[in-house]
Every structure is written in structure tokens, then in C-alpha cells.
Length: 184
Image (cartoon, rainbow, N blue to C red; front, side, top):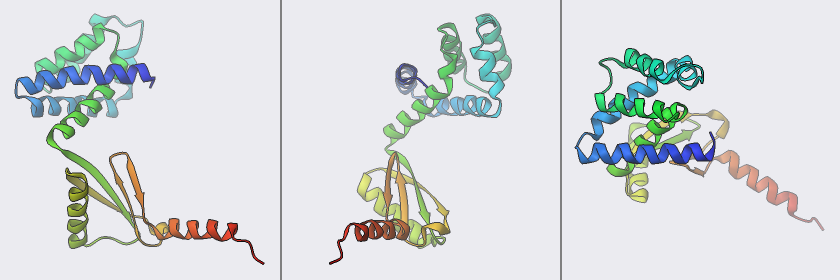
């Protein structure tokens, strides 16, 4: 996606978020946007139709109304109509993503993923979550995955930051350091 489209998605999401926040309906709007995102993800053809230049705006709006009838809030449906009207259908998924990021920021919540060579116990998961929350000041939604190729240690992704304490990375670092050592 072009950087201009991403800026536009943030701008539209911010406007929708502020409106929802002002009306005390942030959670409800987020749920409707989740329905929209799910539909777009499950049916890429929907986005193709919404972005197609030969299909009239009225037909696109009618299609949205048909697809989301009774599933999304009227204000979210109206918001989608406005994006269609402004020829911004292509950014609908990004607007939803940006809205959810703003919601997380507002709630001071974030996602983190831990990659380990062996499964973590519930006690270890709890301790890791507490450490991440203390370090970030946010409530952390922690997911874990097992990847035996890291040999040991831990790789943690928090937001867009990656902390790699895996044995594999440590061995690679040592290998690189040894290559630079001159033997006399």
C-alpha cells in the first residue's frame, strides 16, 4: 500500500475513533469493524468489486448493504459508504487495522509473541507476561509458539520490536566474532 493511502487510512481511522470515543461506542464500532475485516479477508473478491472502477458507487453501496445487513452498526455502514463515495474502498482493511491500534493504545494494551524451543509452562507464561507488562506499562496479550530450530532461549516480539535471546542467534554471533579473530 502506498504511503499516501496509509496516511489516509490513519486519518479516517482517527476520525472514526474520535467519534466513537465521543459517543462511548468504541467497543461496538470495533466489533463492527471486525465483521468488515473478516468479510474482506474471507472474500478478496469483495474488495475487488468495491475497488473496480466500472462498478458504480451506488452498486457498491448496495452490495455493502447486502453483505453487512444487520451485522454492522449503521454508523459503520455509513462510514463505509463515505469511503466508497471518496473512492477509498481500497483502504477499508487498513482503516480497520488502524482503528484497532488506536483502541489498543487507548486501553494501553498490546500483543506480544514468544517463540521458544520447548513449550512454556503456565507459570513461565505468567512470569513472562508480568515482565513484559512491567517493561512496557501496557497490559500484554501474550501468545506463544514452539520452534525447535532456535535450540533454546527465547525470541519475543512486542509490537514492532523484536528481542532475540535464542541460542541460535547467540551461536551465530560467536561464529561471526571468531571469524574476525586473527590467529597468530
